Length: 450
Image 1 (cartoon, helix red, strand yellow):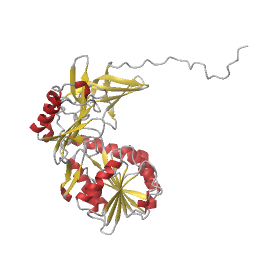
Image 2 (image 1 turned 45 degrees about the horizontal axis):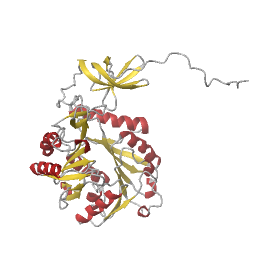
Image 3 (image 1 turned 180 degrees about the horizontal axis):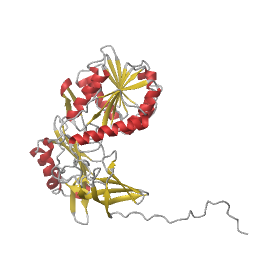
Image 4 (image 1 turned 90 degrees about the vertical axis):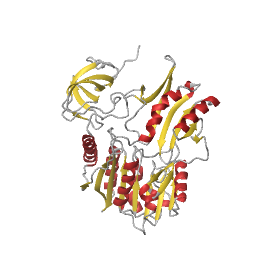
């Protein structure tokens, strides 16, 4: 006798499963409001549509990019009824390129959107509003980006080398030879790059290209096979023409072709020069970075007799200016090579009261010898994942003041909950407009112990 099945586990749920919205379908929509990432939100037939390039109050035709469950992601193809605040996107590639998602919003409206995003996260997740909202830190809305990664891919079917930026919502490459958000020093390189790369003998072996403008201009080429002498001459001639350093990356770390060359960036306010290598983390907006460091130091108010902790220190972007004000700065970073470069940056700038350590900052700060003496103040600048495990133990370090620099309002709000549990109050907050023309929000928050 067959074994009898028990219960309802294998019985059909009944009803009819709704058909999925096909990719490429066009749909006319009324946009009700904006999402936190700047996309318009519409509701139709029980589904929520997130529409790039649409504004609240608009009627648009949108093309489906993808759908899952009751959520549809789409891109504006046509605007039937435009919002009063809509502007013509300054860049002709804005509707396709994945780099700038809110160019159709005037800059002041972009700032207002980012302010709302930060306030909503703090209110919804942490149930708190800062005692004071500081003014946004801003800079030019175009020509600000000093570092960029250019996508390069060989199309075997078309026998063509694609060069440009990734398209919004796909892996397609949008051919771009002029980018409005790049600093002016990189524009001629961006314009000449596609033609130069297409002269190389083995296009299938080419990876991405990285551009950087700091104390010098640099061009990094990632390649998956050795370059011929002829290819090297093409690359070197191009870099000589544009007064740029040539860096290559094969199997190992990026290396300059001329080993005597140095690369870095300056913090002019403090008379500091920080060494940098392609692949290192660096804030791409030099002007807002300088203003951010100045504001962090002002809010943290380090005194000459104080010991300061800088977590996620990178190349020493905050640690070195802080060392000019405090008795001692202890700086901690998870990436060993960055720790080495930060320590060398301190030495090269004659700062001997900053010490650097490598540690896994996704884990609690337990048994760290550098933490045992305690600190008067702490600065954190974590990645998008935030600093949850670190902040859970911060009150044990004795710091009365804490500045948190965030590139993700959601994790800042989450970590604010933990800080409040430990007796810190949110004294002040502000947005940092590090990436104009995008919905990406950077923020700074000052916490003080009760």
